[in-house]
Image (cartoon, rainbow, N blue to C red; front, side, top):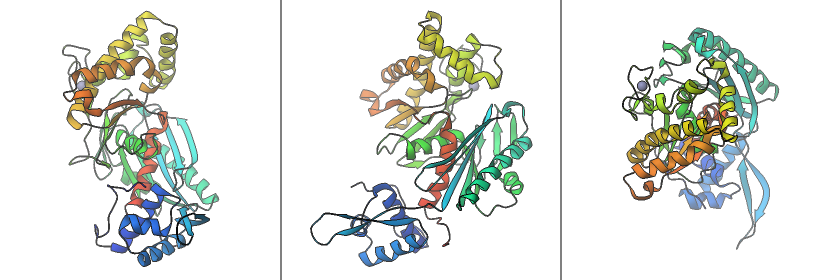
Length: 403
Ligand SMILES: [Zn+2]
């Protein structure tokens, strides 16, 4: 039986009942199917309290009984699983060349997964609000048709997002000081559920933590592989945003003194020498933002064909990437660092070299136990993580009202 070290515990909050409901809900999510007795034994709540809490959660259609019983000494127990069929969480990602939207139910089953091209690199924040609101309305309408209540909407953005959901700077989108959260809430005419905005790397890390194949890892770093490179950091089971929300900006550490110029004005920054731009500047220097995915496919095709020029280039980029990964390994001692974005299709030629470099630079023996893995969630990680953030807020006690 897995017990959570990181979830809310009884008496963490003033509203003890809401907290205890969240404790039970989270326990069932992680351990279903399980009985009321299992919940009592693992959470320390007494059996009568658990029964009342479970009745409330069944009432809210967050849990349901399966009718299955477990063979054990004593009388058979009714087993509980997550329900959540009347609910949905929405995640939307805005990026340089697309907008994507997902909706999931309480269990994380994907209900909607849409992607449309969007000229993020040349659009203003106001134009992005219009586009995001339009796709959000379509998802909300679909959920209404399925008689689902929307629990919340989170938008993922590649940039510095403060704790209020304002985008302070998004260099690859060309935005500064955009109140995306406030403007989107207005555009959706106060939709009656929370609207949040967060950094894409943070949200992709949440997606990997909740839905990725990393077992019970409590310390996970997600590294975006886009034009920019950023890290989402989960330590001891919690996303670490830092004082103002700007943690994880690893893209501008210097890994190759005198290397390629970076858009920040310096040279040899991690994202200048190991971001996707470092590869495309040599293979397709004139590629438009909308062609990035195509051009990366072409790089993969040439690598598969054994093109020595491409293999050398990817080896060099993998080495630089490993230097950045080593900084994360030494600084944070994560159990796993997940490579995302465009690193995924290029991983067969990047990852081994990067891991070798990381291990050679790690101070702790064996890299401190840190594994380098490749995301299985692909390009959709940030949008999925945006929906996961909504589910996380349910886990930590913001439960939907009784229907
Ligand atoms: Zn830089």
